[in-house]
Image (cartoon, rainbow, N blue to C red):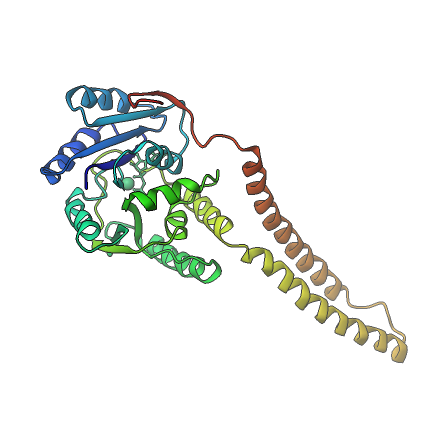
Length: 309
Ligand code: UDP
Ligand code: MG
C-alpha cells in the first residue's frame, strides 16, 4: 500500500477534529496517510480548525461545501477526491474508533479482503426502543431488497481502489451509502466493536430524521412497496367480486337492497385509506425519479486545498 486516504464528513464538529486527527496519527505511525475533511456547511468553527490543522500537517486536506448537503454527499465528495489506493470513511466524532484502523489495513493487505467494515455489536447507551426498531428495519430491508445490509454495520469502512471506483460509478442523487457499499459487491471483512458514545457535540439525528432515512433506503433499493399495492388490489377485487354476487343473489331472492350502512361505510373508509396509501407510495418513487432527472450536482464546493477542485 502506498497511500491511505481517510475521508471524514464533518458537520459542527469543532470540538472533535483535533483529537480525531491526534488519535488517527497515533494509530497510523508507520503508514503514509492523508485525511480529507469535508466541511458540510458547519455553523461553528469547524472550518477554521481544519484549516489550522492543514497548516501544521501537510497530509490534511479539506473540502468545504457551500451549505449543508448531508453526510452522504460528504462521503461522495471525499471518495471523489481521495488519491489513496486504500480509502477509509469514518466519522469525526470518534464514535468510529481509530484503533480499528491497523486491523482493517491488515484484513485488506494480508488477508486479501477488498473491504473491511466496522460492525457495532452492542448498542450501549442507546434507547432500547431504537435498537428494537433498527433490528426490525434491517430484517425488513433484507427481505424486500436484493442486497443484504448487515445489522450494526456502520459507514466506517476501508476499501481498495477498485471498490472505491465502483462506488464512484454510482452517481445517483439519492445516496444511501449503506446500500451502495453492499450493492457494488466485493468481499468485506466485518470487524466487531463496542458502541462508543460521542466524544463531544451532538448527533444530528432526530427520530423523524431516522424514519425519513430508513424510508429513503427502502425506496432506493426495493420496489416491493409498489408490489404490495398490486397484491392488495388483487385480493380486495376478488373479495369484492364474490361479495357482489352475494348481494345480487340476495336482491333477486329477497329484493331488499337498502340495508348495510355499516358495510358501505367500512368499505369506503378502508378502500379510501388503502388508495391514499398506495398513491403516497407511488408518489415517493416519483419524487425520487423527479430528483434524479433534475441531475443536480451531489455537492457544491466553496473552497478546498486539493488541486483541481
Ligand atoms: N455529518 C455530516 N453532515 C450532516 C450530518 C452529519 O457530515 O449533515 C457527519 C458528522 O459530522 C459525523 C458523521 O456525519 O462525522 C455522523 O454524524 P452523527 O455523529 O451526527 O451521526 P451518528 O453517529 O449519531 O449516526
Ligand atoms: Mg456520531
